[in-house]
Amino acid sequence: MKLKTKLTLGVGLLFFLIVLLSVIGSVYINKLKSDTEKILTANYNSLEFSKNMLLALDKIGTDSTVAIADFRKNNALQEKNLTEFGEKEVTQNLDLHFNSYIQEPTHEKEKLIREDLVRIMSLNMKGIERKSDIAIITAENATFWIVSLGTVCFLIAFILLFNLPQTIAEPINQLTFSIKQIADKNYNQRVHFKGSEEFNDLASSFNVMAEKLQEYESSTLSTQLMDKKRIETLVNNMHDAVIGLDENHFIYMINDEALKITNLRKEEIIGKTAHEVAVNNDLIRELLKNIDHPVKEPIKIVSDNKENYFEQEIVPINITKTGEKEKKYIGKVILLRNITPFKELDFAKTNFIATISHELKTPISAIKMGVQLLGNQKFGALNDQQQELLKSINEDGQRLLDITGELLNLSQVETGNIRLNIESCSPKNIVQTAIKNVEKLAEQKNISIQADYQLEDNDLIAADFDKTVWVMNNFLSNALKHSFQDEKIRIVVEKKDSFVKFSISDTGSGIDEKYHRQIFDRYFQVPGEHQNGTGLGLAISKNFIEKQHGEIGVESSLNQGSTFYFILPVSSV
Image (cartoon, rainbow, N blue to C red; front, side, top):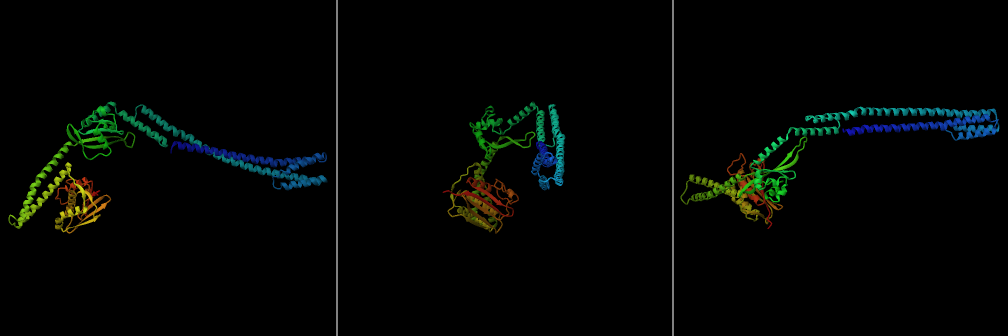
């Protein structure tokens, strides 16, 4: 609980009890005053009137006129001051007896008058006693409540007197001692208060201060400068370009490699914002454009009349300050990795593959033609073993031809030289052409191919007919390869908004979900399967579809078959 809350509750309760004590004292004093006034104004006056009437009665005879007038005057006052039970009847009898006595004075009538006056005095004396008892009870009650509340107030004040100074003084004494220790450079000193939240916050702030002072004391300026120089030397000797930005995009660090490729000087840009530098520098402007969403494609930079390729990586810098728990963002570092040697090797590999594939395609085609001529038996009959051997040569030659075709397509993809002939195509024609290309392979395994067209006949797509058929062939060939004998393959063509989706489903063994992301990578083949391909077909298919602004994917589970699909936009013509 906060100290402020404790003080408010304690002092507030004490104040409330004092106010309550004052109210109760006032109420009981007023009540006692009221009871006393009732005795004085009621009973005491009646006694006074009765005494005066007795004195007047004694004077009747010597000065009858004055005595009678005085008696009647006091009697009239008594009739207006009837406060006790039975006092009214006695006063009325007194008036009758006195009138009778005035008309004919006798000793018996005088005796009756005196008895009436004694009775009135007796009633008022009893009233005084009764009201005195009530006043005594009121005084006792007042005493009880005043003493009780006074005791409670005393206890609360006693508790505050002994606890409050200690509660405040002890943490202050500890803090004073700790400050003296810090002043003596004992930065290991820490304080730990228990109790109120204010002192806990004070202790936490003091400990953070001590920890930072300790950290500062333990690191000398020379050590810091040496560490800074060491880091700068390390960064400057990196082969990767490094540019450091703070949280407001001010450039605070740049190494020699970055200066070289940006054609800038260090003194021109340090302390300036990246946006200021980007005004006159195309590379910095390109880097800022992708700073929040780095591109995967390499950035091409011409330096020293040579094309260089760099991979961009943005590294956010977050630190946890001393004494704090949450990380704070303080900027980011832009890394440009020079991948030019790898890119050159990749270009060389691609050119080699393209050259070899092109050179192999011609002799393989010649071999295929020779095999076909031998198969037609134009140069003589063949025995069974020769025909079997010829069939095997033909299959291997076709496989080599397919591989060289895939390699040529891959080289086109890698060099970006894919030539697309985008036109309005009929989805049905694409599917029927692809089915026709794999009919013989399907017949060999007795697999039926069923096509379901869920679109209108006049619905067209914007696509390259030959490249899209090639993708369909690849999907169907894979489906036939992984389907069991006497199964069926289902093709579904459906329109979805402004796209047409082609789906090819088989009933094979399926593909584990963990391989779905890699299935379209070059040279990747699912482990454990009978691998007799190159692992290029799906990678080439992905590039063909994405170059046509489409999307490609797979849905599959183990032992549940597979569904490969691609989506192409509807033709606007």
